[in-house]
Length: 115
Image (cartoon, rainbow, N blue to C red; front, side, top):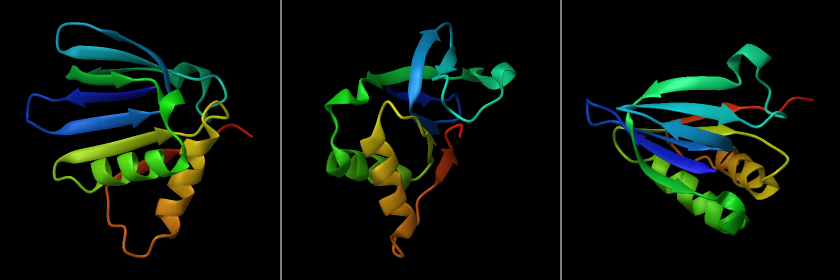
């Protein structure tokens, strides 16, 4: 799932590879897929911020993911966090393309999948 949070200071965080979320009063509990390379005690994360977008990633192809992730990552005051999961291989391919792009200067954090 692709999820965007807007924080009180006006910044945004865009997540890709989220399994589920539960939005509360200006905080959101995120759940990552089980094949994401996080310890079991880190599979859930509560983040400050209001949900502004929640979209299934199943509608993306590699090019769509590349454009969406790349466009978000270069926006001022936006951080993109991509949790690599086997459920969305096109997202991983898009991220690898961005990593190899010498001109890409976006704010991108990658959580590798569990091997």
